[in-house]
Amino acid sequence: LGTNSSFLRTSNNHLEKSSIFSANQVTDLKLARCGKLTESALISFSKILPNLQVIDLSSCLQVSVEAVSSLAQNCEKLKEISLFGCY
Image 1 (cartoon, rainbow, N blue to C red):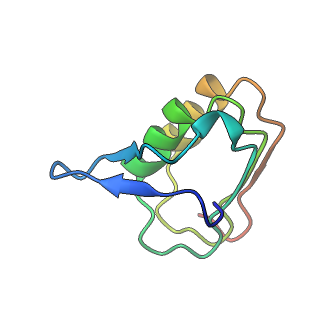
Image 2: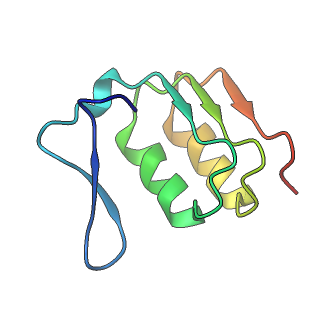
Image 3: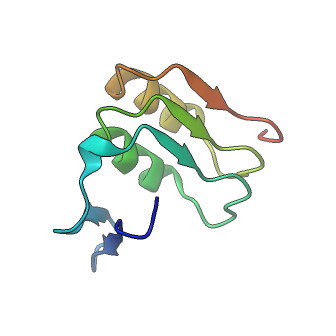
């Protein structure tokens, strides 16, 4: 996400963008081998990253059909989802 980007975890375990984070600028997101990535986090990403074009979820074991569907539905500019090693 870069050095001038960040996410805040709220008490109800949802991710929200911080004041220094511009979600509109994110086009590529590499989360490969992120073992703690949850379905709810991916769904949150799909809702706050409108310009996402490429996401790498390789070897993320908790990727669900619902999360991938949410990405496809909400990220209209999405061109590539890497799911190598997901099952």
